[in-house]
Image (tube, rainbow over all chains, first blue to last red; front, top):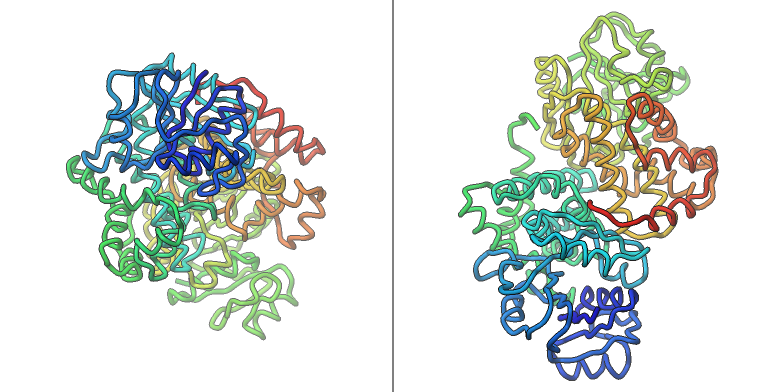
Length: 315
Length: 315
């Protein structure tokens, strides 16, 4: 397979490595020509994933036409622009975890006139790049495409399962980053692991409620793209959204948190988009709502205290 | 309420503190008269929870009769013996997370002739004792008892929700310790957070399959007693089962791991009991089966490698 990976962040870079290890012909595309030249010359991507050897992988600042697969690992805010400029060629595989900030739509719906699939799961890029084992799901409305991609990507270290619930997988991927911010907030407050586990449990229930309202399948939320990705996002020290929530709870502004992390923090983009979506759907997402309020300047300590003071009831 | 807590391990001690903080009259019972005397004299329980101030809590080595509530926080292997010798008095609340090793039965079924409820959730004893916030569920076939207990125990730091699925709550509490051993194994192998998240996700699916076969409600497995307790068990540094699995993966014998931890590790008792139960029910619990094999001496590294080499399929 001739594959193009657009977006040379840590996950795009790691995914390019996975594809090349499976014997595919891979081009990694980044916006900046100087960055592409560095990757091509040195076989390394010092900006996002300096440890990953990129030998055998081409680098370019323009997206080559005619490839068999276009994997997009760009920020959600750039997804629609990148898709609009994609040259002729094979299917699109979205690796991006978010929603379109303009419309609140699922990212796969921005892809027109060619088949599209998404890949998601508990896949911290740094671990995948280090050759540690991971599992993911691929989802598409086109079942044949899912199976083709499964066979093209699956390896002994990166296990790929097919999930036919595209809507659920995309909603999980977007919403888990917002719950990750909240879980980081629990860490930042020093509230402990019990509190964090309770928050994550309610967070998954909130994600499943959103999914139900959008026609997703409940099992997806209990699977790798749902619970699996959520818990690694909320618990791994590597999680950017978790870390951003922790910094914000300790007094950083969201902008300072992003600057300290040095990478895109998707949950910050996704939280207000999800709140709007919930409003349109007429459902309540209390954790997402709390995250939005804290991002707007509300005091996290007061919010947490008010939650603990509520009257007890059924689970 | 006049309450007796039987079992002065870390959770019995922490729970006695919670009840006393709610204004109840509490007696903490431990097997060893000398230990009871130490607790009574010093107001501390140095063996299990030295940091917890036990002022206002009585200590005894015999179980006093006529209390309004008997909370049992004893090892699962001792539960049936303790229940058989309970004096006359009020309902039993089980805090023990396991199954009866003799029969494989749920612990609440060992209680005869008086109302019984269970309490479970992501409640690492050390954090509860430190006054950090937690949430739990109380479950019983007697809904009135559940609500009474909810109101007697709930506080601003310890949130209690009612769950009417007694079977599901007890199965979750038992099975999560076995998954915790496996998650510790992932840590011990250094396989990373992605792999651990995938294992925990499959672990919850396995727990839910067991629950379904026993007539439990699926929602319970997605709630505090299921997913909530599972993730804290598998991820907190404080988790004994996780720690035991880590030590065993690094070469310790199970007995050495228990000795190093210095407390009961319930998953070691529960794993073979669950395997037998699965056999009687005709269901497969592959993670539990793997844990049993490793405890019997199989090589964990080989087991993990064979899992990663299987043919890919649907999720």
